[in-house]
Image (cartoon, rainbow, N blue to C red; front, side):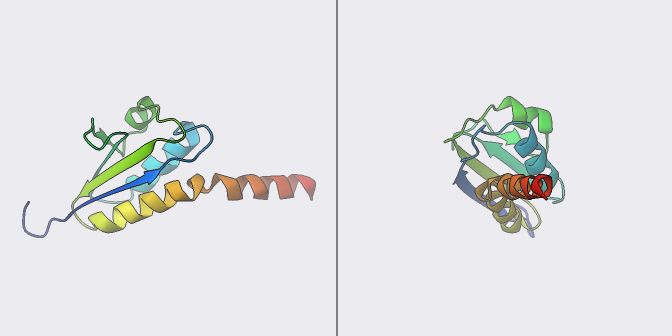
Length: 108
């Protein structure tokens, strides 16, 4: 570990009904790309670890509902990065709110 570099790990349960499919993957990788830190994701704590900024690689994980997603980050704001990613997963990728809003607009 170099001076000024931080490392962090976190994990959370994937509760999205379809698992880590296209929309959630896009949201996760888009958020990951907003940070300079190196960010990796895995479905097992021992790996294999995958670049969390790669849509193709994250989709290829095919993480089903009920999987534990493990994250690790290295670099600037590593803990903040992981807190943001875990929060996104825990909020079900904000899809529940979007679905309610879309339904309300359709009814309105």
